[in-house]
Image (cartoon, rainbow, N blue to C red; front, top):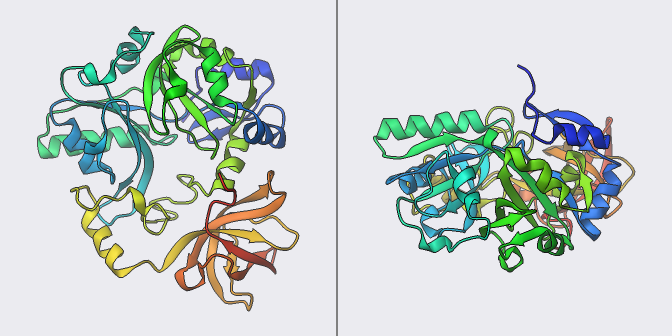
Length: 387
């Protein structure tokens, strides 16, 4: 199957970006260097093209019920303009994906949000809408078609009244992240007041004159915003920010320093089957809702987990990588890594993975097997950085 390209592919190519395949998309992995881009986000601001993320819109009389059955968090807690992090799980409680769910203004038609939400570039009172509840959720790269099918199949099987539309190709998405991100957004926003948003709040605003859906969310641990705009206006929005362009390489090192999960690597329903409790995101599980996988997760919460998602800091030379074994220092395997890198901020080798619960205490000394040799390390309860 041919790789999909984001709307900004030509712009990145002209800028000299290096590309990589990710989730079925051809995405920029770096523009200048991962180290330089990483530092820009930690110290000032950087901009990422994240148009490889999926967008699924759900609206209708039973939209809230459908969302609450298929995500682990409780969408009834959301008012228009709110968002929340959630997992999507199987009947066994295993994570298929993680996602962010946005509550759109009531009456927003599924499939038309990119047009409807950007029609009023000055922003609007999100609570003043009338009509059925509407949501936008963001599956990870390459998961949009499977998520769409899952929502439609469940809706049809249970006779729910909701429209479900895969609008991934209608949207472009950029993320402006870093201590100076708010100033950058304020400068680029021609109407609407985005700097007043709290974490996980969103609103409509005109960015460089383009009506957009702007959320104070991100994947770096820094303050930041994610901007969704019509795909045809992506270049106008991207060009409005005079900050360092960043690729997926820096996005990966930034999220590892914060201990954020990467779908398909730190968990995968086939290769790395994990529940939210094992993966350290039990806070997104609301057992008072009737989501798929609830019963299995209730049992696991009562019984406890055998392994936990943890960070590892290597105390000797070497770079930890996904797949490396973690031992007790005496050749007894106690877990394994799923991600690893040399932290640009700390200048230390760090990794993420799963350890037996009895070895998962912060500061416990362990070892990582690097090229057949046990290297001394210590356990870190993420994040590695205090943000």
